[in-house]
Amino acid sequence: MGVSGSGKSVIGAALARALGVEFVEGDAYHSTANLERMSSGVPLTDDDRAEWLRALGLRLRQANNAGCGLVMSCSALKRSYRDTLRVEADNVRFVFLRGSRSLIEHRLASRCGHFMPSSLLDSQLATLEEPSPDENAWVCDIRQTPEVLVAALLESMAA
Image (tube, rainbow, N blue to C red; front, side, top):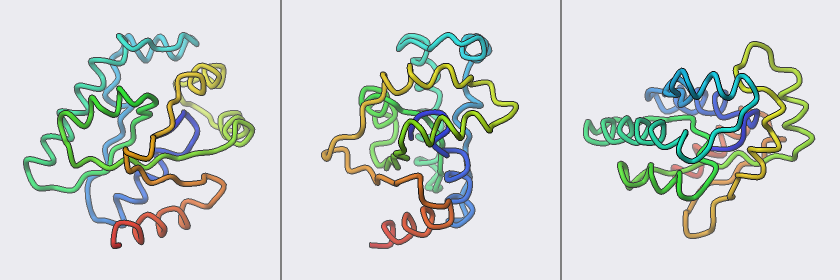
C-alpha cells in the first residue's frame, strides 16, 4: 500500500515471485470511469473507490478460501479502505511503502505510460492515513532497493 509511485507494483511482483504466489495488480480492478477520472487529473472520492475496494476484497477472500497465498498492490490510503479489505480477508497483512514527497515526485516524473498523472500526488498525500500501530503493518522505506525491501519482508514473514 502507498501512494502512486511508491513502488507497489514493483515490490509486490517481486515479493510474489519470491514467495511463489500470484501477484494481483490492484489497478487492473479499477472501472473504466475511475481510470478516465484519474487520467484526466480528477482525484477519486470514497464513493468512486468503494466498488473497486469491494472487488479487491473479494479477490482476497477467494485466495483465502482456496488456501492460496496472494500478493496484491492497492493504494489503501485510508484506514477505512484497509478495513474494507479486512472484512473479506481478516488475515490480510499490509506493507506500507513510505517515502518522501520529493522521491515520489521524481519517480512519477520519470514514469511513462501510466494512467495516474503526477498532478494527483498532492491529493493522494492529503488522503493518506499511515497505518496505526494496531494495524500491524510492515513499514518499508522506499529509499531502499526493491531487492533489499523484499529480503527484509521475507525475513519479517519468517519471524
